[in-house]
Length: 401
Image (cartoon, rainbow, N blue to C red):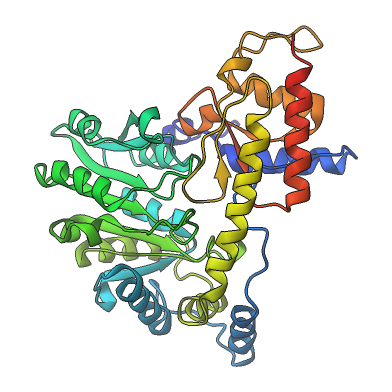
Protein backbone atom coordinates (compact mmCIF):
# COMPACT_ATOMS: atom_id res chain seq x y z
CA UNK A 1 0.00 0.00 0.00
CA UNK A 2 1.46 3.36 -1.00
CA UNK A 3 1.64 6.23 1.45
CA UNK A 4 -0.64 9.15 0.68
CA UNK A 5 1.23 12.38 1.34
CA UNK A 6 -0.65 15.51 2.28
CA UNK A 7 -1.00 18.04 -0.51
CA UNK A 8 0.98 20.61 1.45
CA UNK A 9 4.13 18.50 1.08
CA UNK A 10 3.93 18.90 -2.69
CA UNK A 11 3.92 22.70 -2.43
CA UNK A 12 7.46 22.86 -1.14
CA UNK A 13 10.95 21.75 -2.12
CA UNK A 14 13.95 20.79 0.03
CA UNK A 15 16.13 23.66 1.25
CA UNK A 16 18.70 24.22 -1.55
CA UNK A 17 21.40 25.30 0.90
CA UNK A 18 20.96 22.20 3.06
CA UNK A 19 20.92 19.92 0.02
CA UNK A 20 24.04 21.56 -1.44
CA UNK A 21 25.94 21.00 1.78
CA UNK A 22 24.86 17.36 1.82
CA UNK A 23 25.92 16.90 -1.82
CA UNK A 24 29.35 18.42 -1.12
CA UNK A 25 29.86 16.09 1.85
CA UNK A 26 28.88 13.08 -0.27
CA UNK A 27 31.42 14.00 -2.96
CA UNK A 28 34.13 14.53 -0.34
CA UNK A 29 33.36 11.06 1.05
CA UNK A 30 33.94 9.71 -2.47
CA UNK A 31 37.45 11.16 -2.39
CA UNK A 32 36.93 14.22 -4.57
CA UNK A 33 38.88 17.38 -3.71
CA UNK A 34 35.82 19.53 -3.09
CA UNK A 35 36.08 23.15 -2.05
CA UNK A 36 32.67 23.95 -0.58
CA UNK A 37 31.72 27.62 -0.31
CA UNK A 38 28.02 26.97 0.24
CA UNK A 39 27.77 26.79 4.04
CA UNK A 40 25.85 29.63 5.69
CA UNK A 41 27.59 29.41 9.04
CA UNK A 42 30.62 31.11 10.59
CA UNK A 43 33.86 29.16 10.57
CA UNK A 44 34.76 30.54 14.02
CA UNK A 45 34.34 28.57 17.23
CA UNK A 46 31.59 29.32 19.73
CA UNK A 47 33.10 31.67 22.37
CA UNK A 48 34.61 29.86 25.34
CA UNK A 49 32.47 31.64 27.92
CA UNK A 50 29.36 30.39 26.11
CA UNK A 51 30.65 26.82 26.05
CA UNK A 52 31.47 27.05 29.77
CA UNK A 53 27.95 28.29 30.50
CA UNK A 54 26.55 25.18 28.84
CA UNK A 55 28.87 22.95 30.85
CA UNK A 56 27.83 24.65 34.09
CA UNK A 57 24.18 24.15 33.17
CA UNK A 58 24.70 20.46 32.59
CA UNK A 59 26.62 20.02 35.84
CA UNK A 60 23.84 21.83 37.66
CA UNK A 61 21.35 19.33 36.19
CA UNK A 62 19.58 22.01 34.16
CA UNK A 63 18.62 19.28 31.74
CA UNK A 64 14.86 19.18 32.28
CA UNK A 65 11.95 20.65 30.37
CA UNK A 66 11.70 24.43 30.54
CA UNK A 67 8.93 26.90 29.82
CA UNK A 68 7.91 26.41 26.20
CA UNK A 69 8.91 29.86 25.01
CA UNK A 70 12.17 30.03 26.94
CA UNK A 71 13.57 30.11 30.47
CA UNK A 72 13.10 33.28 32.53
CA UNK A 73 16.88 33.74 32.32
CA UNK A 74 16.95 33.60 28.52
CA UNK A 75 13.87 35.77 28.15
CA UNK A 76 15.48 38.40 30.40
CA UNK A 77 18.63 38.28 28.26
CA UNK A 78 16.58 38.67 25.07
CA UNK A 79 14.66 41.61 26.49
CA UNK A 80 17.90 43.23 27.62
CA UNK A 81 19.44 42.72 24.17
CA UNK A 82 16.49 44.34 22.42
CA UNK A 83 16.57 47.27 24.85
CA UNK A 84 20.35 47.72 24.76
CA UNK A 85 21.00 47.32 21.06
CA UNK A 86 17.72 48.16 19.34
CA UNK A 87 15.90 50.53 21.69
CA UNK A 88 12.91 48.15 21.82
CA UNK A 89 11.04 47.41 25.03
CA UNK A 90 9.31 44.05 25.39
CA UNK A 91 7.66 42.36 28.35
CA UNK A 92 8.40 38.76 29.24
CA UNK A 93 5.22 37.64 27.45
CA UNK A 94 6.23 39.53 24.32
CA UNK A 95 9.37 37.48 23.60
CA UNK A 96 9.79 33.87 22.57
CA UNK A 97 12.77 31.57 22.04
CA UNK A 98 12.61 28.70 19.57
CA UNK A 99 14.77 26.00 18.05
CA UNK A 100 16.43 28.42 15.66
CA UNK A 101 15.07 31.54 14.00
CA UNK A 102 13.63 29.33 11.26
CA UNK A 103 11.23 27.79 13.77
CA UNK A 104 10.29 31.21 15.11
CA UNK A 105 9.46 32.41 11.59
CA UNK A 106 7.61 29.15 10.87
CA UNK A 107 5.52 29.58 14.02
CA UNK A 108 4.65 33.18 13.17
CA UNK A 109 3.54 32.45 9.62
CA UNK A 110 1.66 29.28 10.51
CA UNK A 111 -0.25 31.22 13.17
CA UNK A 112 -1.26 34.08 10.88
CA UNK A 113 -1.28 32.97 7.23
CA UNK A 114 -4.08 30.99 5.60
CA UNK A 115 -5.66 30.48 2.21
CA UNK A 116 -6.00 33.82 0.42
CA UNK A 117 -3.25 35.58 2.39
CA UNK A 118 -0.32 37.14 0.59
CA UNK A 119 3.19 37.62 1.98
CA UNK A 120 5.52 40.09 0.29
CA UNK A 121 9.05 38.70 -0.03
CA UNK A 122 11.74 40.97 -1.50
CA UNK A 123 14.08 39.13 -3.86
CA UNK A 124 16.73 37.95 -3.54
CA UNK A 125 15.48 36.16 -0.45
CA UNK A 126 16.48 33.48 2.04
CA UNK A 127 15.37 30.17 0.57
CA UNK A 128 12.92 29.12 3.32
CA UNK A 129 10.59 32.12 3.28
CA UNK A 130 8.48 31.11 0.25
CA UNK A 131 8.13 27.49 1.28
CA UNK A 132 6.98 28.34 4.79
CA UNK A 133 4.35 30.66 3.30
CA UNK A 134 3.23 27.89 0.95
CA UNK A 135 3.03 25.39 3.80
CA UNK A 136 0.77 27.81 5.65
CA UNK A 137 -1.50 27.97 2.61
CA UNK A 138 -0.52 31.50 1.63
CA UNK A 139 0.81 33.05 -1.55
CA UNK A 140 4.38 34.41 -1.74
CA UNK A 141 4.49 37.73 -3.61
CA UNK A 142 8.00 38.34 -4.87
CA UNK A 143 9.25 41.88 -5.40
CA UNK A 144 12.61 42.18 -7.12
CA UNK A 145 15.11 44.43 -5.41
CA UNK A 146 16.52 47.27 -7.44
CA UNK A 147 19.96 46.57 -9.01
CA UNK A 148 20.58 50.34 -8.90
CA UNK A 149 20.09 50.25 -5.11
CA UNK A 150 22.05 47.14 -4.19
CA UNK A 151 19.11 44.76 -4.80
CA UNK A 152 17.16 46.39 -1.95
CA UNK A 153 13.39 46.77 -1.83
CA UNK A 154 12.24 50.23 -2.87
CA UNK A 155 9.22 52.05 -1.48
CA UNK A 156 7.43 52.42 -4.82
CA UNK A 157 7.78 48.69 -5.54
CA UNK A 158 6.45 47.88 -2.08
CA UNK A 159 3.45 50.15 -2.65
CA UNK A 160 2.59 48.39 -5.91
CA UNK A 161 2.82 44.94 -4.30
CA UNK A 162 0.41 45.60 -1.43
CA UNK A 163 -3.18 44.39 -1.90
CA UNK A 164 -6.11 43.96 0.51
CA UNK A 165 -4.91 40.35 0.93
CA UNK A 166 -1.40 41.25 2.05
CA UNK A 167 -0.75 39.90 5.54
CA UNK A 168 3.03 40.34 5.96
CA UNK A 169 6.13 41.97 4.57
CA UNK A 170 9.29 39.98 5.32
CA UNK A 171 12.35 42.22 5.56
CA UNK A 172 15.77 40.58 5.93
CA UNK A 173 18.88 42.65 6.60
CA UNK A 174 21.78 42.21 6.40
CA UNK A 175 20.37 40.05 3.68
CA UNK A 176 21.07 36.50 2.66
CA UNK A 177 22.29 36.15 -0.10
CA UNK A 178 23.20 39.64 -1.33
CA UNK A 179 24.30 41.30 1.94
CA UNK A 180 21.80 44.17 1.65
CA UNK A 181 21.70 46.59 4.58
CA UNK A 182 18.99 49.25 4.89
CA UNK A 183 19.97 52.68 6.14
CA UNK A 184 17.73 54.57 8.52
CA UNK A 185 16.53 56.78 5.66
CA UNK A 186 15.74 53.76 3.49
CA UNK A 187 13.74 52.19 6.33
CA UNK A 188 11.82 55.43 6.81
CA UNK A 189 10.79 55.37 3.16
CA UNK A 190 9.47 51.83 3.51
CA UNK A 191 7.78 52.74 6.78
CA UNK A 192 5.89 55.61 5.13
CA UNK A 193 4.31 53.09 2.77
CA UNK A 194 3.51 50.66 5.57
CA UNK A 195 1.86 53.34 7.68
CA UNK A 196 -0.63 53.88 4.84
CA UNK A 197 -1.57 50.17 4.98
CA UNK A 198 -2.35 49.26 8.60
CA UNK A 199 -3.43 45.72 7.69
CA UNK A 200 0.15 44.80 6.70
CA UNK A 201 2.38 43.35 9.41
CA UNK A 202 6.17 43.32 9.25
CA UNK A 203 8.48 40.42 10.04
CA UNK A 204 12.10 41.54 10.26
CA UNK A 205 14.79 38.86 10.09
CA UNK A 206 17.80 40.53 11.72
CA UNK A 207 19.90 37.39 12.13
CA UNK A 208 23.10 38.91 10.67
CA UNK A 209 22.64 42.23 12.48
CA UNK A 210 26.22 42.37 13.78
CA UNK A 211 28.02 41.42 10.56
CA UNK A 212 28.31 44.88 9.03
CA UNK A 213 30.97 46.39 6.79
CA UNK A 214 32.44 49.83 6.15
CA UNK A 215 31.36 51.27 9.53
CA UNK A 216 27.65 50.85 8.77
CA UNK A 217 25.17 51.12 11.62
CA UNK A 218 22.30 48.69 11.99
CA UNK A 219 18.69 49.76 12.48
CA UNK A 220 15.56 47.64 12.60
CA UNK A 221 12.27 49.04 11.36
CA UNK A 222 10.33 49.13 14.66
CA UNK A 223 13.22 51.15 16.08
CA UNK A 224 13.17 53.64 13.21
CA UNK A 225 9.37 54.01 13.12
CA UNK A 226 7.80 53.35 16.55
CA UNK A 227 4.31 53.58 15.03
CA UNK A 228 4.98 50.18 13.45
CA UNK A 229 5.98 48.59 16.76
CA UNK A 230 2.54 47.06 17.44
CA UNK A 231 2.52 45.14 14.15
CA UNK A 232 6.17 44.15 13.85
CA UNK A 233 7.76 40.85 14.82
CA UNK A 234 11.49 41.39 15.27
CA UNK A 235 13.34 38.09 14.77
CA UNK A 236 16.95 37.39 15.65
CA UNK A 237 19.17 34.64 17.04
CA UNK A 238 22.61 33.64 18.21
CA UNK A 239 23.69 31.58 15.19
CA UNK A 240 25.65 34.14 13.19
CA UNK A 241 27.11 36.69 15.61
CA UNK A 242 28.09 34.09 18.20
CA UNK A 243 28.96 31.18 15.87
CA UNK A 244 26.23 29.02 17.44
CA UNK A 245 24.48 27.54 14.41
CA UNK A 246 24.35 24.03 15.86
CA UNK A 247 22.99 25.20 19.21
CA UNK A 248 19.68 26.05 17.49
CA UNK A 249 18.40 29.10 19.34
CA UNK A 250 16.42 31.87 17.69
CA UNK A 251 14.14 34.41 19.29
CA UNK A 252 11.70 37.20 18.59
CA UNK A 253 9.93 40.13 20.18
CA UNK A 254 6.46 41.19 19.17
CA UNK A 255 2.83 41.74 20.13
CA UNK A 256 1.67 39.68 23.08
CA UNK A 257 -1.24 37.99 21.29
CA UNK A 258 0.99 36.89 18.44
CA UNK A 259 3.70 35.59 20.77
CA UNK A 260 1.05 33.69 22.76
CA UNK A 261 -0.22 32.02 19.58
CA UNK A 262 3.35 31.16 18.51
CA UNK A 263 3.98 29.62 21.92
CA UNK A 264 0.86 27.48 21.56
CA UNK A 265 2.07 26.34 18.15
CA UNK A 266 5.49 25.47 19.54
CA UNK A 267 3.94 23.53 22.43
CA UNK A 268 2.67 20.97 19.89
CA UNK A 269 5.84 20.68 17.83
CA UNK A 270 9.16 20.83 19.66
CA UNK A 271 7.99 22.24 23.01
CA UNK A 272 10.90 24.12 24.61
CA UNK A 273 14.28 24.60 22.92
CA UNK A 274 17.19 22.66 24.43
CA UNK A 275 17.68 23.70 28.04
CA UNK A 276 21.46 23.58 27.62
CA UNK A 277 21.38 25.72 24.50
CA UNK A 278 19.19 28.24 26.28
CA UNK A 279 21.76 28.60 29.08
CA UNK A 280 24.47 29.09 26.46
CA UNK A 281 22.41 31.65 24.54
CA UNK A 282 21.71 33.68 27.68
CA UNK A 283 25.46 33.88 28.33
CA UNK A 284 26.10 34.84 24.69
CA UNK A 285 23.65 37.74 24.86
CA UNK A 286 24.76 38.98 28.29
CA UNK A 287 28.47 38.14 28.23
CA UNK A 288 31.44 39.86 26.52
CA UNK A 289 30.65 41.26 23.08
CA UNK A 290 34.02 42.62 21.95
CA UNK A 291 34.83 39.71 19.63
CA UNK A 292 31.81 40.43 17.41
CA UNK A 293 33.37 43.49 15.78
CA UNK A 294 36.71 41.70 15.54
CA UNK A 295 35.10 38.86 13.60
CA UNK A 296 33.12 41.27 11.41
CA UNK A 297 36.43 42.95 10.49
CA UNK A 298 37.81 39.56 9.41
CA UNK A 299 34.72 38.96 7.27
CA UNK A 300 35.23 42.39 5.69
CA UNK A 301 38.83 41.52 4.77
CA UNK A 302 37.61 38.32 3.17
CA UNK A 303 34.82 40.16 1.36
CA UNK A 304 37.24 42.66 -0.13
CA UNK A 305 39.62 39.95 -1.32
CA UNK A 306 36.94 37.66 -2.75
CA UNK A 307 35.12 40.45 -4.59
CA UNK A 308 38.39 41.60 -6.16
CA UNK A 309 39.27 38.06 -7.25
CA UNK A 310 35.81 37.40 -8.68
CA UNK A 311 35.80 40.62 -10.65
CA UNK A 312 39.04 39.44 -12.26
CA UNK A 313 37.26 36.33 -13.59
CA UNK A 314 36.14 36.74 -17.22
CA UNK A 315 32.34 36.88 -17.36
CA UNK A 316 31.79 37.41 -13.61
CA UNK A 317 30.86 40.71 -11.93
CA UNK A 318 30.42 41.13 -8.20
CA UNK A 319 29.20 44.09 -6.14
CA UNK A 320 30.42 44.75 -2.61
CA UNK A 321 27.92 43.39 -0.07
CA UNK A 322 27.19 45.71 2.86
CA UNK A 323 26.89 43.00 5.49
CA UNK A 324 26.45 39.25 6.24
CA UNK A 325 29.06 36.74 5.07
CA UNK A 326 28.12 36.09 1.47
CA UNK A 327 28.95 37.54 -1.91
CA UNK A 328 26.47 37.29 -4.76
CA UNK A 329 28.18 37.64 -8.14
CA UNK A 330 26.36 37.88 -11.45
CA UNK A 331 27.18 35.24 -14.06
CA UNK A 332 25.02 36.74 -16.81
CA UNK A 333 27.99 37.05 -19.17
CA UNK A 334 28.67 33.30 -18.89
CA UNK A 335 25.28 32.28 -20.25
CA UNK A 336 25.33 31.14 -23.87
CA UNK A 337 28.94 29.99 -23.63
CA UNK A 338 30.03 26.36 -24.00
CA UNK A 339 31.88 24.09 -21.60
CA UNK A 340 34.86 21.96 -22.72
CA UNK A 341 32.37 19.08 -23.02
CA UNK A 342 30.19 21.08 -25.40
CA UNK A 343 27.30 21.91 -23.08
CA UNK A 344 25.85 25.40 -23.46
CA UNK A 345 25.34 27.19 -20.15
CA UNK A 346 21.75 28.40 -20.17
CA UNK A 347 21.00 29.11 -16.48
CA UNK A 348 22.83 29.86 -13.27
CA UNK A 349 22.11 26.28 -12.21
CA UNK A 350 24.08 25.14 -15.27
CA UNK A 351 26.91 27.40 -14.11
CA UNK A 352 27.09 26.02 -10.58
CA UNK A 353 26.92 22.41 -11.84
CA UNK A 354 29.73 23.20 -14.26
CA UNK A 355 31.82 24.63 -11.41
CA UNK A 356 31.19 21.47 -9.39
CA UNK A 357 31.90 19.02 -12.21
CA UNK A 358 34.84 20.85 -13.79
CA UNK A 359 36.58 22.38 -10.77
CA UNK A 360 35.14 20.58 -7.71
CA UNK A 361 33.74 23.85 -6.39
CA UNK A 362 30.41 23.87 -4.53
CA UNK A 363 28.42 27.12 -4.57
CA UNK A 364 24.68 27.88 -4.77
CA UNK A 365 22.62 29.04 -7.76
CA UNK A 366 20.88 32.41 -7.68
CA UNK A 367 17.60 30.83 -8.80
CA UNK A 368 17.26 29.34 -5.31
CA UNK A 369 17.17 32.91 -3.97
CA UNK A 370 14.78 34.28 -6.57
CA UNK A 371 17.23 36.38 -8.57
CA UNK A 372 19.08 35.05 -11.62
CA UNK A 373 21.60 34.74 -13.11
CA UNK A 374 23.77 34.84 -9.98
CA UNK A 375 25.49 32.44 -7.63
CA UNK A 376 26.17 32.70 -3.92
CA UNK A 377 29.53 32.21 -2.25
CA UNK A 378 29.89 32.03 1.51
CA UNK A 379 32.98 33.84 2.81
CA UNK A 380 32.79 31.94 6.10
CA UNK A 381 36.00 30.05 5.28
CA UNK A 382 39.71 30.71 5.64
CA UNK A 383 41.33 33.17 3.26
CA UNK A 384 43.34 30.31 1.80
CA UNK A 385 40.20 28.33 1.00
CA UNK A 386 38.46 31.40 -0.45
CA UNK A 387 41.42 32.20 -2.69
CA UNK A 388 41.50 28.61 -3.92
CA UNK A 389 37.76 28.74 -4.59
CA UNK A 390 38.11 31.94 -6.60
CA UNK A 391 41.02 30.44 -8.54
CA UNK A 392 38.74 27.57 -9.49
CA UNK A 393 36.05 30.01 -10.67
CA UNK A 394 38.62 31.76 -12.83
CA UNK A 395 39.94 28.52 -14.34
CA UNK A 396 36.41 27.38 -15.12
CA UNK A 397 35.58 30.70 -16.79
CA UNK A 398 38.75 30.64 -18.86
CA UNK A 399 37.87 27.18 -20.22
CA UNK A 400 34.57 28.33 -21.71
CA UNK A 401 34.22 28.83 -25.44
